[in-house]
Figure 1 (cartoon, rainbow, N blue to C red):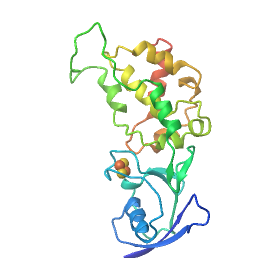
Figure 2: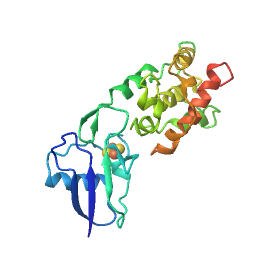
Figure 3: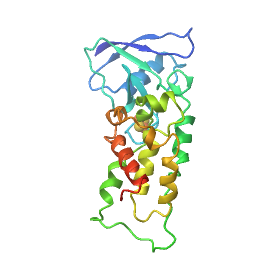
Figure 4: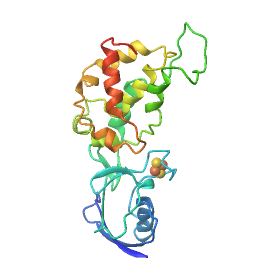
Length: 227
Ligand code: FES
């Protein structure tokens, strides 16, 4: 076991911020939080699945947005700095209010709308649209890309990488009956033209998605350049 120094941003400035916890290897950041909560039950953070599926445990570790449940703690490091996600209002300690993120997500109508003029069908394994769809389908709405994007976090008028990636996966699908409306939605102020392609979102995604590439595709489609 190794003693690990942990500093946590607390919403109550009176609350203790520096902790020491004994950890063995391998240990995830979420395990550290759970150990700390056993010594200070007032420490607040979110998690659910513990297997990188639900997207609720996203926090900043040493300044980087990550999933706490799948981020290993490097023993021998100087310590850990744990903070809530940037660009979203803090509810308490490491818990943020994800309303701005969810509002952007909902505004692209992120559900599949079947075409009225076609029979329901399963996409063939070799359907050409699969490559674009599957490149963005693993999104778990964790918000890591949102917080890594200065425009989304600072200016809540930008739809942000996750919502635009979701719009791309739907618009790529030949069975989508809402493609034209969706492309109009993402072409408005705050949509695809706002992205500066810094690629912070793509570097931060814990599922290996490249939202910047999705936005580039959407931008192409929104000016009528193919599918
Ligand atoms: S607890 Fe579900 S993604 Fe981490």
